[in-house]
Length: 90
Image (tube, rainbow, N blue to C red; front, top):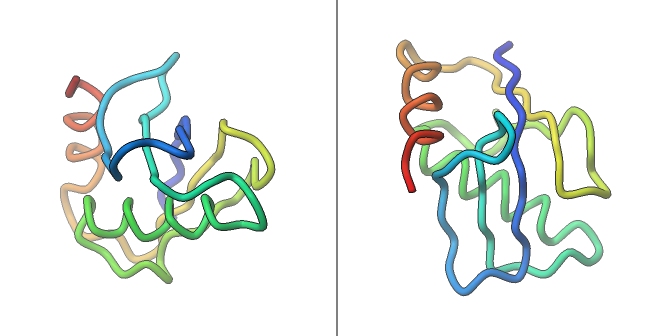
């Protein structure tokens, strides 16, 4: 399982993945931070950006905060490099 930190921006104008916040990948989601809606949106948006199934993206820590640790099960080859490239985007 691959683990990596993310910084979530709930209530954004659009869903997006890219950028760096203190070493964490920035994930912006339109969903509000209520009743787990933002967490589910994070899973969906990350899955699409990384080319994996949403059920393979797991919030390991930080379900109630903006800073989370994401676990990625069954990741395809090269996904670590993709995460690094996404962090460098702005």
